[in-house]
Length: 291
Image (cartoon, rainbow, N blue to C red; front, side, top):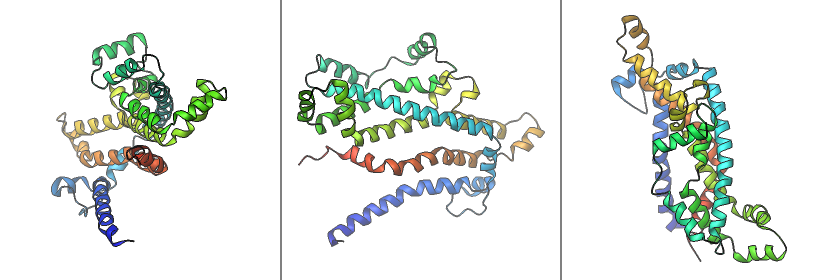
């Protein structure tokens, strides 16, 4: 290692450690006894350990398993369909010969600044698309193309897909669909993986659509189930309905359970990230420096 690279590497190593510290504190706090958290606060070296928060989550058993299954399905389906819709819009916008291309690009950009509002959106989905209390309620709202992702992908196509490649395909007799599927998509793995990761995180962390469009608890995603568990724990812990209820509520780890729920929520994403890391880094840096 060259001497001039030592200091930057040390700085990067310290920065990485600093980024990991909150996750470590989160995990330790979820394993800390509730009373210890209340008396002494958060600590990397708690005075008493406890699995009570995870036992509280485990008691929900089938509910958690069903919610995880729904979330995995919604994340996979929404990411795949959303990625294809984004790519199919971004590619035409990247073509210089697209009729009225600037006008279409303006409409896409306009949605980054303004939207229809909650009430019109709710009425459209519920009254006309009839997605209330269906799994589509967790998928369809996210399929409305995120204009930011679309513009990023459009910039990638413009900067990294040579016009000569498309022209040579035309000469060979390929149509637009074949060019897009056989040439553009294989050459766009870095940006597809990057946008796909963003979409997957959005779907995995989404709780808002379930809150607005779902009343059937059997269709709740993991985020909605865990959010309800937090609300129930806080309500029981602060309930004044009677001494019997309060006696049981004291045992509910309302503080540590929030930490445990956060751990349960982020672990799948942390486990999946290493598989996307290579493409993710390439996708967000490619085209940033031109030689």
